[in-house]
Length: 492
Image 1 (cartoon, rainbow, N blue to C red):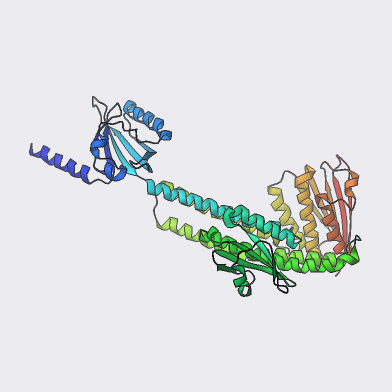
Image 2: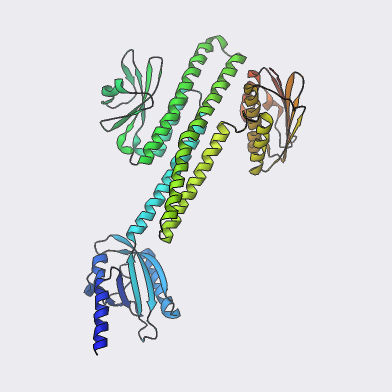
């Protein structure tokens, strides 16, 4: 009798002080016993809970699944672990994890249910997933934005691309580009009243916050200032602020380059009219473009890439140093994998903007590396042969020009040719370097080879060769592939 009294005291102590909910449920799903913790966690007193159907508070989306699980436990006699959602007495939705154990050989098929509130854990997991997805979205948008900038040739195009990016990524930012004439003191476009107070304090590329607005001077062209304004309340997280600062950095850099380009083009428009662009202008434009690519690549490598690698190392250290629940551990490892993917994407972008080995190892090695890399993700086979190139020495401008043309031919083959085989043949003669290209793709009509035809990068290749005082010839017919022969005079 004394032993039984002691055991009852033991059970009552456990039932009274346990932080989890303990239930005893019969085969008809009716609660026979509930610990006082049911009131702390769910808002129901034990007396309210006993005698009712155990599945009444469950979310309708989970109720049928849990009822089936209850029947399976009774039928098999095997314990189960489930996760589901339950409504608190006040209507709040909570997340529970239950461990269900059948009472063996009981006539009423009783089961003991130990229920743990995992709402906080689920919210943390959800927040981790949200942050991971947001982080990946921002990184992908920066990558696409930086790539798109290489094709922007006017300030108006840059403005449109910037406003579009902000509206897409931060929908409530309400971005506006205000154009301010410093000489006449006039402003063009919609702008907040507080802009006038900060005009003299704006620095190119720096964020200035005033009266719930962020003002950023993108750059000046002659006496005209281009000022971006967005709502400061739209920047809700530190990662959004870092993204915005990086976006502005890219934009300012391209604005400065375009300022130079547009000024030159404006001066030449009257003289050139519709005639072909002079060779020196083409060379200048391509050199500016390559400088812009190199600066973008360097900035990506030295800032964004290094930040991602540091974050990756920190996450790796956290995973090694601390123990997490299996689900949280899985989420954290997913973030680590996402960081690795982002690092890989940034490195790929850097390589496209500034090709590896081009300056260090020369044209031949760089092309071999490009062909090997392209071959991995392409359906066509690439054959590359060289002739008389052992002592080949060409300057940097010629090296980059040939490399970019090869890139364009590869892009054209991937997008349009449907070819199975590509052949590149590089020949050096006493006075020229020749590149012959041939594929077995679908080809196209002869009229598309005219100088006025702008598609498939033909115009760009012509201008690139013209800037190097070389020649290029295209030959193609429907069903007979494409042949390209170009030659560039050696300057050394």
